[in-house]
Structure formats: C-alpha cells, structure tokens
Length: 193
Image (tube, rainbow, N blue to C red; front, side, top):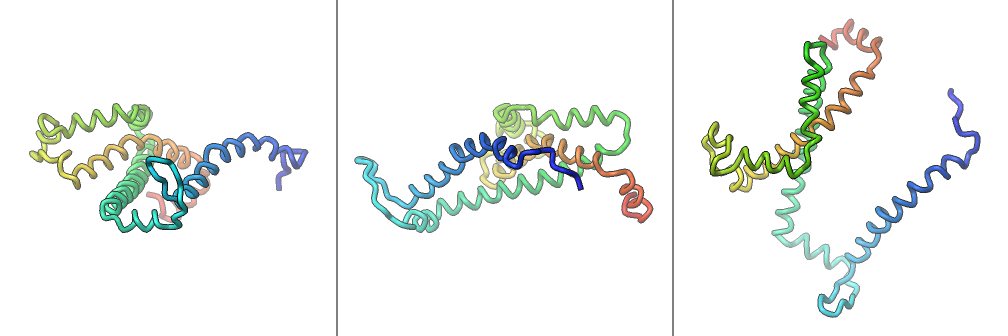
C-alpha cells in the first residue's frame, strides 16, 4: 500500500478550495436558484412573484409541443452518445493495430474535433443542401434538411462526426495502457484474434 504524498491531512482540502468555490458560485447556486424560481409564477409586466408550487412543471409536461421537443432532444442525446461511442471504439480498435500509416489515419480521424461547431455545421449544410448538395447527387433525396426525421438524423450524424476524435483519443489511450501480459493471456485463451 502506498503512502499519501500529502504530509498534512488538511492540505488536499486547501488545494481543492478554489475548485469548490468556483463550483458553488457557477454551478450549484445557479442550479438551486433555477429550481427555486421554477416554483414561482412571475408577472411579466410588474415582475411580482407568486408561489405556484409544481404548477409550472405540470403545465410544461402536459404541453404536447414541449413533450415533442423533449422526446426529440432525448433521441438526439441518445443517438449521439450511442453512435459516437460505438463508432469511436471501433475506429480506435482499428487504429490500435500495427498497420502502415497508422499515425496519418489517427491524425485524420482526430482532426474533426479541432473544427469549430460553426464550420462543422456549414460543412454538413453544404453536403445536404437541397439545391446542390453532394448527398442529393448520390442518393437523389432532396429532403435531407426539410424532413424533420431526416434532419434529426443529419444533426445526429454531424454531432457524432464532430466529437469522434475526442472519443478516439480516450479509447486509444486506454487501449495503449492495457498491460502486455493481459493481452498475451487473452490471446492464449482465444479472446484476441
């Protein structure tokens, strides 16, 4: 068992104090205030507040427009996370192989993360533009950005592509840190081909 690097038991807490202060000021307090204010009704003209309990929550969760947007947001989040993790793990496994030019492939796959979101959005808008996009040339479909289901798919695709490099870096780092003994044992057991 290793000994602690800190000889004073209070030193870690002193070093973490600035982080706790930032978290309290910019994360916890605003979250608390947001929840507290959600329990009130506010007059838009006078600014007067009146306690409403969970009326605001009941109102939005019975609003069909809000529920549709909530479901679309959940589909987007789930799609980006699942697709992003599966694709980036698959690519990281391929990039971890000993192949010629692997460093070039790694650089090219990590590159999209360096783009700004505005550039990535403009690129996908150019690719799926109903007037002259490349996707129309290959598929013949002109409703990529005008059909709500297809547009959601394109937004998920763009967000997944944009963040792919970030996930690949973490997966590659993890794969590189697997001990060789464990890999050899797995190979002998037939787990690794």
